Amino acid sequence: MADRNSIGGTGNGAYDLTVIGAGSAGFSAAITAAEQGARVALIGHGTIGGTCVNTGCVPSKTLIRAAEALHQVEAASRFAGLDGQARLENWRAVLRQKDELVAALRKAKYLDLLPGYNTVAYLEGRARLANGGMTVDGAPLQADKVIVTTGASPSLPPIPGIDAVPYLTSTTALELEELPRSLLVLGGGYIGCELGQMFARMGVEVTIVDIVPILSAGEPEVSRALAGYFRDEGITLHENVKTRAIRRTEHGVVLDVSSDGRDETIEAQQVLVTTGRRPNTAGLGLEEAGVKLLPNGGIQVDEQMRTTRAGVYAAGDVTGRDMFVYMAAYGAKIAAKNALNGDGLRYDTTAMPAVVFTEPQVAGVGLTEAQAREAGHDVKTSVLPLDQVPRALAARDTRGLIKLVADAGTDKLLGAHILAPEGADSIQTAALAIKHGLTGAELAETIFPYLTTVEGLKLAAQAFEKDVAKLSCCAG
Image (cartoon, rainbow, N blue to C red; front, side):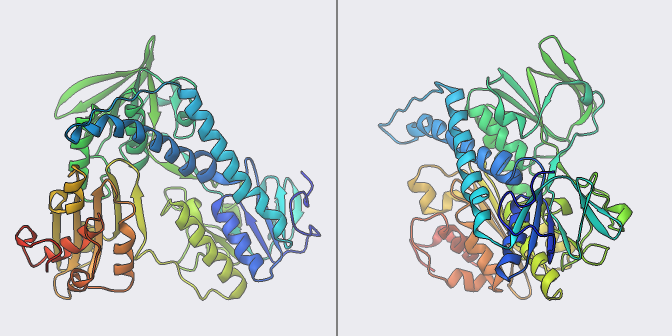
């Protein structure tokens, strides 16, 4: 095992808290504990920083932005008198710039932070719960309180033959030195939609296949609209299909599917698997130590982030839920404070925003209409097309909609869902409204700046009671 005091910390083996996993959740837990004066062992294995900075959020979003910039030049013709042309000149240069950003952020937000926390010792090795404590590369380590933050990895769908084809994952797809001519994306969730559109805008012929509609966990109005926009950009969609088998061919891969009683084959040079992620729990000795796992492989935790073994907590993607980096950090902070101070805090997702970085962007917070009904609410909804939002009209881009969900009896806002080019930067207003219990009427009465996308939230709230098409600018 590497020197236990190689980065930060005192390293004498007496720790108040041990954190297994050195990604976003692990660092959040370690820093939170250190700020309270605790002595922490932070155990990492592999590249420090975890998924987000190395293989997830940072690299994918910078490539998505690059593809968006390329597309926006071509879309300039929506304004009279403008004509733009752009082309991808050097994919490898785009990759190198992405890699430079990843390396810089990994250094600045992870490696360089550790020396500033004198009570955090970074240990490199494989951790395992054992004998009432734990080991690191086989060496015992005192561990009265433990937080597991080992993240998740891409998982394979149960398609016959998938193990025999050379598939890409969301990690390896972002490392391709050469763009394929065609790409088959298995899975229409947020990763499949984001990367599928990105590669399509870079000139790849993209086909997305899913057994359900794309972004099926969200609002159906959003799913249908985005599917239409994808098709407008030349992306082929096969939704609600049964995947029967996949096989390798001389020219790439072939997927056999069935839809509406018809069999079909889909060919592509390469295949990208984006059908979900599985928590990294193997080899940790969890079940042997009395830590219960969920059917999806995640560690079962309660609202205080406690596992089924006393003194052991878990946070982030390894719990199999809310796989967003900010939720990993949030949950880890709660776990650290509870482990050290007596379990007084609870994990709350009532106002948890989520964003899909397609274009238009998909953003949501709170309950969908279906979830609200399942929870027993008498539901009312407002669906506002973006052609009723002045910002969209001025931008000559009315793709999208805003949907609000409220309790019909109390008018209390339960959920907000935005499909818009600037939806990601608008959703936090709705998150605050839900967090603080605003009603639709209160949101409608709030002052919003004119010619902004977020003003659409006010208009959507007004649409519960009025026909906003009959209102003058800023009226109501």
